[in-house]
Length: 441
Image (cartoon, rainbow, N blue to C red; front, side, top):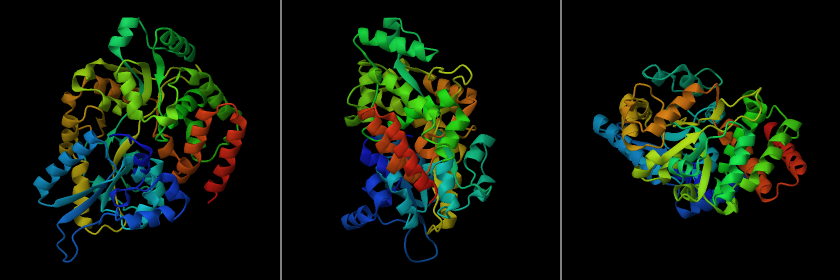
């Protein structure tokens, strides 16, 4: 899977292809963006062929807009079309745009099947009746652990999601650079800080960093909160049960402020791809990102990419929790071609579909344990082991909390912090006030 390349892409992730082009903030702020979108003709005709009960087309809304993930989706879809005789109309929308506009999309005329995320984000729409129960499909699936089933289950105990891929967040680096300089993966925050200082002396930017798209900084907040306050506090904070003004959250931002001088400057004007390229070009020493960072490396360079999990900050908490988002598919509440949409979802969750992904994308892991993973690269194997050894797994900030809170409050707040990290108290008070308003809605 891939993360969006631009802020527009990020906004697109919230909204399937049929709503491409809307900006996350404009969409959530009001109807003006929707009106503009409708006027552009970008609302692709969703759904299946009109007329007749024998519908042969299933519409698939996809946020996989980066070249590699888009190519993989096309190959998976081709496999289904050949085996089923059905036609899939794939509507691909910029990843960010899709995500930012998902709420309006699902309340309008969504595609029959659409890409989305496990966990809170899935439960949020299932609870609001904007997605279909897929429990019958789960009775047909094989190769999934209970953990994946739990991540696909709504508050009512029914399944609403078919997981396909996942990827851990970690600190990535080029082995050749580290071997040349004699660097070693840090085990503690102090060691990380010392390593960063040495990298500066060696003429490297210690930590590649970008937040033009709005979401990458969430990964930094997540890992610091997990390391400082633990998994349960992090999840409760995301659910609106803990105060952002607490000393625990303040410590996260204080720690982050201390690390900012090690980060690549001018991050608000840089995409994650550009930051990843600085790592690829050996200008930066390391980069906290998802496994998809490998998309910016050539096939020949894949063996030179390695990672370590973010180091321990509090010995009582340890360093075994991590973000490992799960991607997959859901079905609209009123698909135009429900029977065929269910056939597609069953295939998307199959070993066959997983095998296609393994064969074509070295920057992700497949959720179906029945897949033939002998084709995994050394990096993929190590990533799978990391996730397997994790004691707690979060889905990522913008998937573990309400979409509107992540979009309208957290994105601008984190970007304001990066721009000016001095007034942490005022920033957290603003987040808390807005949180109370949103979570009581």
